[in-house]
Image 1 (cartoon, rainbow, N blue to C red):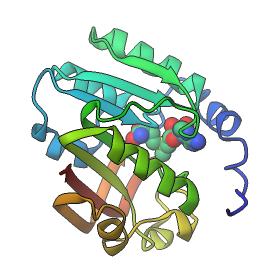
Image 2 (image 1 turned 30 degrees about the vertical axis):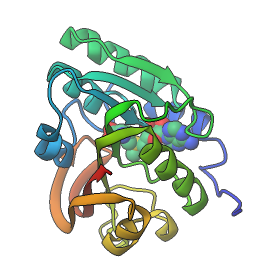
Image 3 (image 1 turned 45 degrees about the horizontal axis):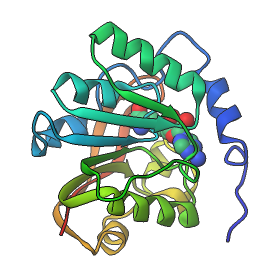
Amino acid sequence: MSTPSPPFTDPAGTWDRRYAVDEYLFGKQPNAWLREHASVWKPGDRVLCVADGEGRNSVWLAARGLVVDAFDVSSVAVEKARKLAAEHGVSVSFSVADCDNYLWQEAAYDGVAAIFIQFADPDMRSRIFAHAIRSLKPGGILILQGYTPKQLEYRTGGPGIEAHLYTAPMLREAFRDLDILELREYDADVDEGAGHRGRSALVGLVGRRR
Ligand SMILES: C[S@@+](CC[C@H](N)C(=O)[O-])C[C@H]1O[C@@H](n2cnc3c(N)ncnc32)[C@H](O)[C@@H]1O
């Protein structure tokens, strides 16, 4: 097992400090890849948002009529997420939890959203991906977005550690037990709060559990 490097040794403290500002670090609008692909889920479907931060994705999905659970390690972020849900008059079941302590439900969800969860080193990433797959019902769909190693040149967001980044072949292998509906590496101008802004090297995946 690899030794986590700072700031990954104290994720709750590190992220609580980052989120302790009035602004929403990643904005209040959903991630573009999620917005583009969320029609795979229909109103009433159950969706889990992994490391959901300040709630921009979970709240948007709830406003589309989905039944949403969300968790994040930062209590400050989850408090802001609750506020955002209240602003939109929607209900999301939020929890404060580390991905290694979260009580993942088995075969419970029609969807899992994993958007910019590259705090995870390769060992943790394997654990999260395994949980995410197992938490889907057969036929359930994962939507995932991250940065590729080219992002190290752009430096417009992301962990800045190559081992945490994804490539399309790596995701194809990691999710070989899913039917891959879409998998794309692309560059785009991202405008998702101060945390993710500017030309970015992205990869997106949509995969269905068999
Ligand atoms: C780049 S932000 C993305 C947040 C959200 N998914 C979004 O797209 O706006 C990464 C998130 O991972 C959370 N996080 C970091 N380490 C974590 C861990 N070990 N378990 C759960 N969440 C974690 C942080 O608090 C932060 O909200």
